Image (cartoon, rainbow, N blue to C red):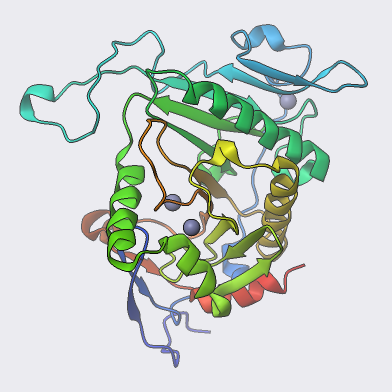
Length: 335
Ligand SMILES: [Zn+2]
Ligand SMILES: [Zn+2]
Ligand SMILES: [Zn+2]
């Protein structure tokens, strides 16, 4: 089949209601999932610093959750050995990344940690049990809660790179936590667009999105929905939203139900696209004392199956070759 043949669906511009970004949905370009399989080559000749017994290979823990029966740690959070930011860096109280020429070098202060998700040497979150994923989410919440009380921290970002194409360097299942003295630009963008929209429409965009996404819905429970966003930048992009309107992730009540739901959503993706790499991002509100009634925490899952190239870097316009409606239907049927 000629992958560039014309399909009945003409390319279409769509604007994302959360970021204001434009994407092009070009559903006819390439849509066979089989084109998106990326088996990974693993090195087995190295000692894993995240496995039990090798704790001395990582800095002392910031947080540890132990199995109540065995007493053995189940999830550990440790400082990143190769941090992008450092806790000993210069602290600057600048409250945004809006740099001016005299501020071309701002603080490098920040906290960069690794969440070791299991005491078993597995590489994917889907290899953990529902209970184990719940413990990981519990650790996320506890650490976020702690960081939210640190006056030097304005924002914390939890993210997970899964698979080589998503940027992992160690295979033992882990995620990362970055806590910064400023709100990073991507979060700032979402906050400002959703604030404007809230002011003009008197409703949270994310609550609206949940209502308006029937044809892009993958699964809904009493507590969460997972859907493919209207203006998905990436093929099979997913967004998980709590049904209840909440601005801060660390105030969410049930990490157990959330962990189960996230695991199930990842399972769908991996069943449908075996070997897929993805980035998972938790977007929450800043830690200052302002009210963020207009913001709704959420989890973005960005499959790394398409190459981000010159067009995207140069224009900021992402071209997505799989229509979100089609992606949602396929993912809904994947389990
Ligand atoms: Zn390991
Ligand atoms: Zn909402
Ligand atoms: Zn977001």
